[in-house]
Length: 286
Ligand SMILES: Nc1ncnc2c1ncn2[C@@H]1O[C@H](COP(=O)(O)OP(=O)(O)OP(=O)(O)O)[C@@H](O)[C@H]1O
Image 1: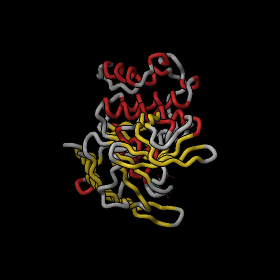
Image 2: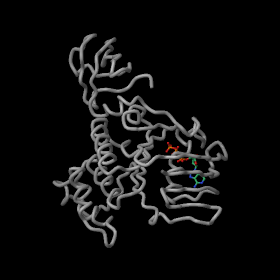
Image 3: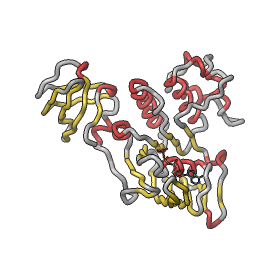
Image 4: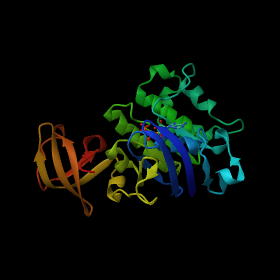
């Protein structure tokens, strides 16, 4: 369990803003944070990473106390054991993929976990490539793998997919879910894409002007959607055809959801059972 209680005065374009966050994250959860630009999402991640100092607060991670301002405890970033991935890939340009990954190994760390990561992230054929020769999605896969080399207690993802086109985004979502589950990570994902976070997150929290909107419990997306993260199957109960896409109402397990699906998936009819891949549907009205 991760327990967070942080206060920080920020300076926004509209004047001072107090960031006040109290939050508990169970081990193994994928928590998504959403909220308008400037609401404090990145600042929260930076404080968790030890890259920004709060005025007061506590960060407890299992039995470890990373921060307690009342006791003057403040672990430096290197000691906190976090994995960080931002929008820009931040790989070393002169190192190839293998060297970028190996650089993250701790001095006495065995390389077998690295090998597992290479397999799970399907990087075998890219190991000798330099970052400049890789696509954005491939670079971000390497950045994600590198963030996981030291088996982090907390994986922080700050809009990691926002520079990628929709198809690459969907593929990377699948990789993130795969490593999150395979390595039983505790992950915080900041994203502006509502269908992305609904599809990926176990729990969603909204931040506005430095505060969590809900009491720290948050919102749990329909379980069926998280499980259907890569493939969705259900029965069409209502259908409207627009210029470029269908608006569908689909019964999925025991819930009704609304989706937008491009016309290119083929002819759809009410009553039909459908199976859709992740890059063929978007949630509506969320
Ligand atoms: N070190 C700092 N000291 C004071 N204020 C800061 C500091 N860093 C950022 N801020 C301000 O805090 C506010 C919140 O910024 P933050 O980057 O956390 O928002 P965000 O929700 O991540 O936004 P976005 O979605 O655009 O990335 C902004 O108005 C920013 O100018």
